[in-house]
Length: 497
Image (cartoon, rainbow, N blue to C red; front, side, top):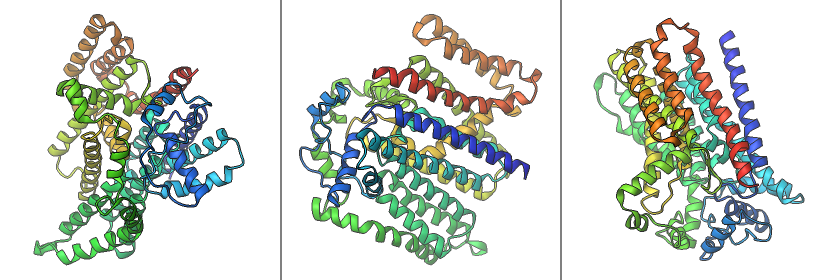
């Protein structure tokens, strides 16, 4: 009981800290300085004022005008009304936001924007709760993993910025998080009819929110197949009838919920374009394509730009990708990610060596989350085969698996099992950091200090009290919280002054 009370108290602290940061980002970020925010706002306004859904048309992506208004930081004498290129998006977020917009319609534009941004913050709080519930379902007796995952998602600066803007991202991420939670619960119990139908409705609502949630369909099929193999029993025969019934109970509601929207698009955009993607590609014809960029810079430079920009924009690249933070911060985050990735690899190795460390359900749930992250990565890569969209925020639908694997990797680095092996590895890391510091002045003291501190920790580990290892993860998450503060007041606000 005491542990549960402490866990809930820490969860409350994380939620309150996120709410404070979310409100600050929503309040202090200048008008329209969240990616695509004007187009999303115009969609909300159209739904509220016209009592219908917009149709994406030629001219909704005025490229020259958009580049000029972005360069001038959206001055008051330039209207955002012509920016309407998100009109092909599924309608659920905009229908929801239009209700709030009607309530705020008599107030100033600043108040309307703040209100709609805070709606996304509300969705962000719900995302954190779903992350907490999902990981707790998998690891009910491991509050470190549960709270660590939740804190990671709460304090990534770019994630805060996106869940404090006007867009359909936060609601889509919330619905996908609900889907993951339901799938994990079904793996832990069984696919009864009521839960299967509810899962189908949730997936259908995701399809009505954003295409990033479409990964939930194959995830549901994978979960059904996984449970079918689990239920084989002594006969070793898979019941295809049971698979068919469970699939129908899930996919039937999906179609019932999403079909009206798809039929509407077929009627407007044509039978070959039920999602409006073809119309979108035609409307944004002036946007830089991957083919053109490859022909300009070559494959190696393209890959370098892809990895570099994706990493930076996952953590902290604000505005319309124009507000960067100090390069030393990115390098420090890169060093942290290298060590955490190493820790995750060591975790996998140790699990393969240990017999029955996890239950079968936990293994299935971890595989499901890994597949979810992989499918999200695939959609990101696929989108970048058409247009140059090196934006790490497109990986945010996978924040629950990313947060969990980050936490697992961080904890593995602090176990006694790998303490000796990590001494030479950390020595190599520290010496590399020192060499880079003296050979490349832009490398900076911060990543160098982190490399040295990690090395000193492993060298002196046997002499340190046990509580040192316990406080390291909270210090990492507290540092992310501090970074979010620094990003807003140290970089975003000064950039637009």
